[in-house]
Length: 375
Image (cartoon, rainbow, N blue to C red; front, side, top):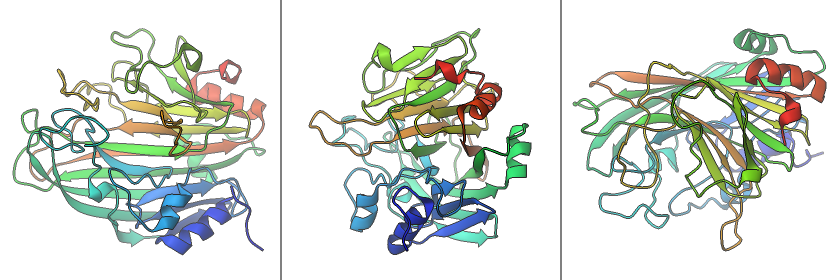
């Protein structure tokens, strides 16, 4: 008897038909990642094979065994990308090209090429990839990318987050420890351009899903950058004293970001329809202020960028839609690296499924918000 669509078992069986997979499990917590799909964590479960599958998958693209031009969005909860996306140091645009969709091209090493499994244990796997990346200004970077993905058991999750989880709440937690080495012969700096580790997670939206980005309220600078794909409608975003609320419903395309003067080392979302609280914790050093700028334009300040981003998918002007999904993204600072040096960025994802009363306790402790404020 097969698993129902929407369950982890269904997604695992589907992935095994089309790509290489690595399964990590601890009790009822499971995750599957794919070396074929650049070592990304595709999806996870808090309740074994029959449990809710938390990651968004692009079933049609994965099943097609074909590649698209520009970008292959296979989905997944945690994928290793590299910035910047736009600007004069972009690795997604060639020198002289316009910053538009026709000229946008994701580097194959983070889009279509497989990553190598270096080692695997029951609770973790280590992957790596060597690549050459050329930016808009003509600099070619020799890069060695590495990542260790670890599935945490319930005890490790509570230790990591520093709290107790009620027995009635299902949970799954995993972290990716990501590294980028300068494998070339010259220093990466403001003249050559610098890269960043950029981790993106794609999740399933609902009409009652709210993205929550905690902020430092008494800091200088812009509170939220909402100019990526046009201004966000006022009924889709709300600025609270200590957090930004943003609709993650998959109904209208939009992206927001928080810079280093306002960001906190945690973001999340609450899906009231399915009783899911998602938490992302990440490395953040508030002494480091230079983050790559990914705006699709020739930039006045290429190192004034966002630390975290949230994206909500929606129909394009022609009515087509890639998802729908929503994204939670985190970035490392700009990688000012001498030859042989490395930068590291940790990104940890947790899902909690249960009743609102118990999830509200976790949301208050981890995000500093009341779930009653959510959409």
